[in-house]
Length: 351
Image: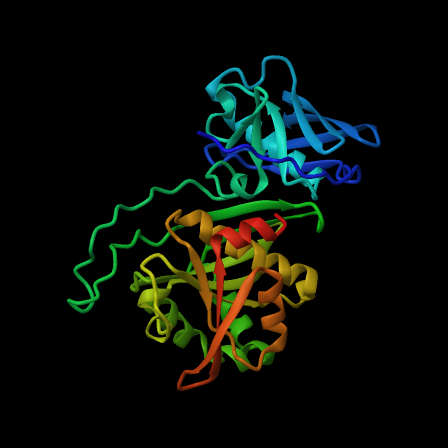
């Protein structure tokens, strides 16, 4: 039985968001959603792929309710789910203060809505952003099988192969840009990786100011390690950042806390100085955390171990729902253990 859900007061529509971009996980082509304001509390959304009109909806803020009224018979077929998800994301972007949408129920809402109210489907923001409909390229989940690697008393689950190509992509309306993450290509990205690691501000934290041959060996060793992989982050396809995603239980962090099998962690840097600054760096924190939660639905926590003295990094963590749990010592640094819990992230962080 579904518990009743109380609708919270909705924020006003953001009519400044004129056109947004969306990528259904099961499709390659981008869908654009154009917004035509009808008045201060409503807008008409039209979804297009190139010049083809796909469908639309009216978005209305009615008292304490944000209602998405799908046009025509849209939503009446299960195959409409991708387009309905796109229109839901567009609606949330245009109503950044809304915690949920009210949509006429139909077969396409079966995998999107998490509640019902007076015959309508309720699409909860915190649940919607966890669904494998948009943002994260579809990937097969691995079953819980034990790896033959590691100590007999602590063998981790068998991990999926390292990804290739595009991993994650999302339009950021507040920056007017598309953020994307792709797996690093050791040959294609080596020169860029070398240049970034040899910047003094990066070398201070990463200690990898080495020549290309040494960094090529570093990336080759990473390719052979099933517990982590490297990622290049871009804004509008311009490479900006480098990240390492890892399974925390098998990482150097694992022995320093009570690690769970699906805990994830990451390290990151902004290598392109054109894109420094708090708004863009905060976008990376949000996107990377979102990507890792989408990657494995059994992941309950994203962990981190920044320097305890790195106050700027800790401030970004706090804004992205990471809690500082303790301080501890690595051989090379005094670290802060930080933790982001799934439920809190999707409840508190704007996506």
